[in-house]
Each structure stands twice: as structure tokens, then as C-alpha cells.
Amino acid sequence: METKEKEIIRLEKETVIPILKSKLMTTLTGLIADPSIRAEFLKFCKRVEYTIRAWYYLQFEDLMQLHSLFDPETGAENLEQQNLSPEEIDVLEQNFLKYLFQVIDKSNFKIANDEEIDVALSGQYLLNLPITVDDTKLDKELLTRYFAKHHHENLPDFADKYIIFRRGIGIDQTTDYFILEKVDVLIARFWAFLLRLIGLKETLAKRSSGQPKKDVKKINEIADKDFELVERIRLENMEISISNLLSKTAIQEPTFERIIVVYRKASNKTKKERGIYVKHFQKIPMADMEIVLPEKKNPGLTPVDWVRFLGSAIVGLVAVISSLKVPSADLWVIFAVIPTVIYNIAKIYITYQQNLATYQKLITQFMYDKQLDSGRGTLLHLCDNVIQQEVKEVIISFFILMIQGKATKKLDKRCKKLIKKKFGKSCNFDVDDAVQKLEKLRIIVRDANGQHSCVDIRSANEVIGTTTEEIVLNVEQQVNDMP
Image 1: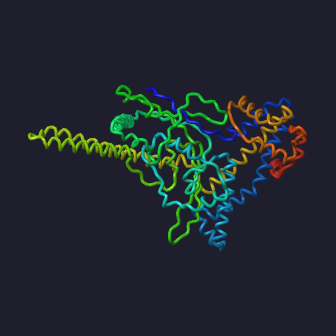
Image 2: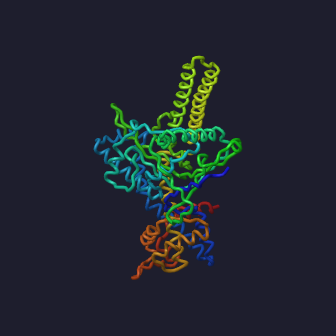
Image 3: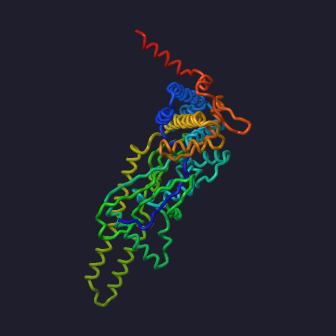
């Protein structure tokens, strides 16, 4: 089955090194010829990790303490024990959001903006029901106060109720017969043709979410180092005929590899809601992103379904009335029209029930397969992400200076070139942040020309010094060696 036209989605790349720390260390160490230098470099990598972990410990501890006050399950009880005023609680919850968003940013997540959301939801994948959020069940004060004090560019329209962070781009593929879906596409094209004839084309221009649909950019060839291109393959863009109606078809949808949703439920008349929800998902197809939204309404018929439903009823009614007006009413015509109308209405209802069953199945699947964690578990995961990423940035930046000598702005290019050559990965990461940490460790220097150079690896290890973790490991080793 051929695709009419390739649908390419362009998304901004994240500043992340997509390589496991252990693999990075092993590969870089293997590039060092001198065995003694290799041993010193491995020691350096360990000391860098221990040191960076210690730097972040206090910040992460503050984050966890604040979360204990706003955990949806136990936060209310903990707040009651603190005997704080409403104003003091307001300050603490804003501090929690500040620390939380800093850690999320350090973990290389980006706030999904309106353009990305519109592109993601401009198609359909496995979910074929209109999913909307019940705004009355979500608090609108918490995030509004935060973003009033902490300005962000390109905030989405829903940022007063909930915020979505995304990281990483992947691909999800599904192969099936999709018989009902293909029939649905054919019927939709037929109805679209009829609506164009009577001037109601805009009716079909609405997305399933009920918001105006923006045109997705069709790009055949785009070369931009700061953007990643992914292809969306869906039934709506395929040539569908009787010959391929019963054959298997592969569809493809880009995914957000990680999504974090932050929100608070609305308060009621008797209780002020203070719990802040932090939910973490993985491998979410972009077109089905509505599945992660909070406080979803029960899905109903799509606008297209309503058009078919009303159209079938009107056509059937007109046909019956026209037949009755004829002096000698043809009962056979009536008997032929009524079953057809009933069949169309029944098909719409059955299709809706099947889509609803798919929706419920997806909800169950997301609960077990797609949702990584929530609350404290998500925070611990983010904290570890921050440490792992910054350790990798520092290690590779120091390695380049150690092997290739002095560098200024070329350090960024050298790091990316090495990662592409040795790991086959294109990436973009914050070299300036890594340089600042190396300067903080006092193991690189900058000359009058702005060029950075590093001390030798043995001196670097001496400057960092023996870490607490190494002392503990040495004591454990001595205990194990005792007879």
C-alpha cells in the first residue's frame, strides 16, 4: 500500500548525550594507549561522579522534603503537622515548583508548546475518540502564580491548568489489517467530498479534541542541525482500494520517549486541595498524546460520526417521505431504505463501541506499560538523570581537552564529532555547563586568549582528592580480605 505523500514532523532536538555512562567510560578508556593513564582516567570518572552527586545532594534533599508536604497521598497530613499558615504554604509550594522545574530542565526535558501539541494531535494512530480535559476538575491558580514570577517563552494555552514536559523522539510501528479503520477512512473521504459540494468542508477540519487543526508541514528534505525529522505513516494518507482493503498494513507514529505531566486537582467548597501530581510516562505516540492528559472526560462521538449519523437519518427520512408522497407508494423502496438507514446508524454505534473498547484497553496498557512512575519515584528518577547527564558531559569534555589539547568554542564541535564517530549518535549538549564544572573542580584553566586546557590526569585526580565513597569502598575491601 503506497503513501500519497510523506508526512514529516520536525521537532527541536534536546541537549542530551544519548549514551549509557558505562559505555561512554569504557569506550573512551579504550582509546587511551597507556595502561597507567587508562587506570587514572577510570579513577577520574568515578571521582567526578561521586563529586557531582555530592554537589546535588542538598538540593535534591530540599526537593524531597518539599514534596513530602505536597504529595497527593500523604501531603495533607504532613502539612497539618507543620501548623503553617496558608500564606506560608503558598510560599513553600512555589519553592517546590521552582526546584522541580529546575531538575526537570536539568534532565533535558522541554515544555511542549502549542505548535508541538498541534502537530502531535493533527493525526490519529491507535486512539480514534475525541479526548478532552474537564477544566472544572483542575486548579488554575498554582501554575498561573508560578509562571507569573518565572517567565517562560512559548507557554501552551493550557499552562494555567497543567504543564507537559517532553524529552526524546522515537518511533512506534503497528502492523495489522485495520479493516474497519480503512472502511472508516473511505467513508470519511466520501463524506468530505459531499461536504465540499455543499460548502461545509470546515466541519471536517476540526480535530478530535475539538480545537482547530493546524496544517502539518510536509517536508521532503530539511537539513537543520537543531531539529530532528521523523516520519508519520497513517491510513489517512494512503491509497486505499478494494484490493488492499483485506491486506495487512504497517502504520508508523513518532513518539515522545518521555513525558512528565504536572498538575493539581481543583479544590472543593469544604477542602483546599494542596496535592501536586507529577506523573512520568514513556514511549507515548504523539497522535495519542491525549491519553496522558489529567481529568479526562468520557469520550463521545467524533464530529465526523455525528455528521454521518445525522446524514443517514436525514437521507432516510427524506427518502421515506418522498416515497409516501407518491400516489402509489412503493413499499419495496421504503423497505429498502429503512434497513439501510438502520444499518448505517448501527455501524456508527458499533464503531464507537469498538473505539471505546480500544480506549479502555489503551488506558489499562498505559497504567501498566507506559506510566513509569509518579510522585517521589519520578523525582528520584529525575535526580539520577541529572547526575548521569552531567557526569557524561564533564567526562567527555575533559577527555577531549586531555587528548586533543587546547580548545575554545571548538570544544563543542570536537565533542559532538567524537560521539558521532565512536557511537554513531548525533547529539547536542551544554558544553558551557560542563566547562563551568571543570573550572569549579579546578582541573582546567583558561588563558588570555580564552582557550581552555586541562591539567594532566594524575594531577586532576589529586586536585579532586579521595572521595568519601572511595574510603568506604576501601574499608569494605579490607574487611572482605580479612581471613
